[in-house]
Image (cartoon, rainbow, N blue to C red; front, side, top):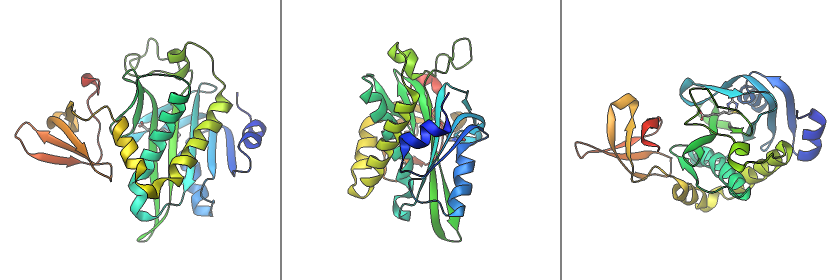
Length: 250
Ligand code: BTN
């Protein structure tokens, strides 16, 4: 179990709010953002009871088995769309650093090992009228979540299952947040988009999107994170949000 004392000491001087159990770290971080949290402030929960995933899905964070962190960031508006790339690349660095191989990003931001999802990223922007107030970058990482016997067994995995040895969640959390800082600081350089693109496993694949309404070849991505898909009719379409059907391992 992570404790508030361990987490705040390890992450000092970063402003931290730690909860043993919480509905969703993204919700708590959005509330803190509105209260004026500084960029880099982070909400951590050992367990989430109503973790949120993309496209209205539920994200499971069982106690003692995962990382759930939401970082408040205050980027310039033109870089907003690259915040999820920051999250995905931070997880990629974490997994690379553990010596895992076959680490990639399934568009848009599922981090996978050997084609199985180990982490998801959900960033949510907060607006004050037309102005961007900030964004919450939520990252969930499966550390020792056991998917055996569940409907997710062939699509999801955990760090310890892949490594075959235990890892220290607190050390992982610290490395993950360091990596978020590193990628966030590089945002203006243009490197974030290039590196995210390089780690995508989706390009060149035949993909199925929008519940089968769009089938085609994933040709390219743009700096906003959009996916350009050449449909069977030869037309190029841009998709900004969606999910690639699991059947194609993409
Ligand atoms: C996805 O792949 O659908 C995104 C999952 C994002 C989950 C994280 S866990 C920390 C943060 N708090 C939430 O409620 N969601 C994000």
